[in-house]
Length: 285
Image 1 (cartoon, helix red, strand yellow):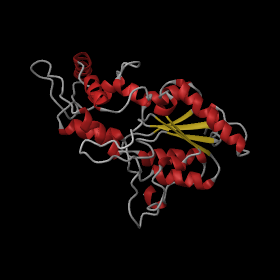
Image 2: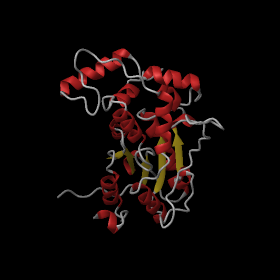
Image 3: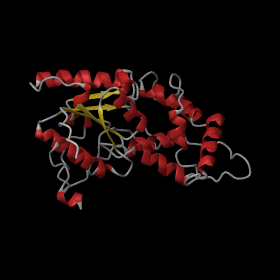
Image 4: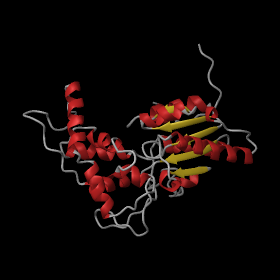
């Protein structure tokens, strides 16, 4: 039996898909509803390009969220070469998930309503995860750890309206009583010692500089709290995207993968790593 690792001094959280409900759920729902092969939209986003992709630019805060950006995002999701490449990958797996069957030649590139998709992603991400959010609150109450967040995010212009013409707010929406967290702050940043957003700092995961920045900031906080030094090896990072975890690990951080729809399992791993109970007994059943 291997000796368990010492508990981390700092815990770094992704937000969407970890602390709040995953925007990937909105993407999955959109793909299924519109008969688009499951996984295509994420594939198209990740293909970037890194320097000029609409999604990459907005998450680094290099462009403004407006109709011109939505048009650019639609173009990013509509590149014939990326579509063909993805279909070829699917053909090799002999499956097209829950979407269009690849028969009778290459299907047309999907006509994706980029604006509607984007706002569905943003709206779903305002709901706290039923397992990870309570775990975060318990970690904060313990006072034993530096709690940080690094989110690849978007800066919302003041007064921006969503696709239905409603004023958008990024405040999280807690379930009403008897939910014990019903009266919690609606500002997700308030639950962390340090909150880093890619659009504000100009670097996004999986760039190693994102992790180095987070560790530096958490180290400063740890020293102010009298907790000593925090290094990459003292930091446990939770994310739902494999490539983000891969580069975090290369940078020296410890990692936990949070799979879509399986945050309970991730909390159980987190519980084991930190050595304090984070799941309610009912949730463990």
